[in-house]
Length: 446
Image (cartoon, rainbow, N blue to C red):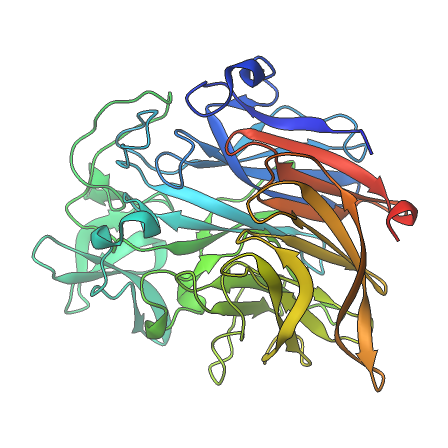
């Protein structure tokens, strides 16, 4: 179906072909973009993206959205909804003097709220320079039967950040310090003394951002999972809230991160969000209170799959998780019979794709998966299947057809159902900064 629409377009030829940046404008543009998430909330289609300073998985990365009230025919101007603290924002991937967001994943809560989770890193390069990460510093500690963030001084002495940003010392006595906001602004009395997520002095600013400097007390350098919420179909968003302490365990190490795309709201009203640990095992977290609190099964902390993954629920309630293979081949599969609390590993499903994130949704008995179809990240397709049953219970997916999305480069993508007639897909059509949308009539696919 030839209805491709450009939704996010970079404006810097260092990260996108020169002939394509002419399509960048005030409505769709920025320096660079990656990692799409797409969901329908009420009558509003919401497209979320990493809005980047350098086309890499680090640097100054904000979270941005565009919305559509007519199922993708026209779109709002780009809106930035989360801005990380930074002390430098140079437009080059050799700069990582900024905190950053990465990898949005959205779901619709039973009460209608839009829930977005996203990774947040203090100043570092994330998994791309692990030597910077604080492997030995505990990020949370229990106090008065609740988990609180831990910050450290230069000598390694710890402090707790409790309600209202009050900072307690290692004897649990109140100090003059206060963390004033989610961004990590630290005050000593009335004096601003820097940001707990940054190191050193303020440097160059090439991204027209507000920059600052590092504080004497610092959060451990690792990834955190933050949640944003919209109660009005994406028009406005809450400040990001750190939910990592709800589910983090010591075995996770310095990374338990978001698998980008969409989460799953089950037939029983449970929100399940897909995470994974350091490019290895998957993690299933869930909420039964519209995303206010999050849980993880202590008896089975991992979900019997690998890497970035997405989940669908069959009409009989069985949930299937599709992972990211280590190389071109069949797609890893895991199955849950109890709303994502426990999982078991199944045989890989007969869906061939390269090592790349894929998106999967289900509508009734049908399953739709968008993915690259070649041995490299090329030639996007939607593969269609039906839930496979044995003795009346879902055990997998029978894939039977595929429809072309594009020719050439194709990487991360996200599917969503638009209405009873159409589904839409948001996808990366270039290695960086060129994010497109198409919609397909469901009857033409099945």
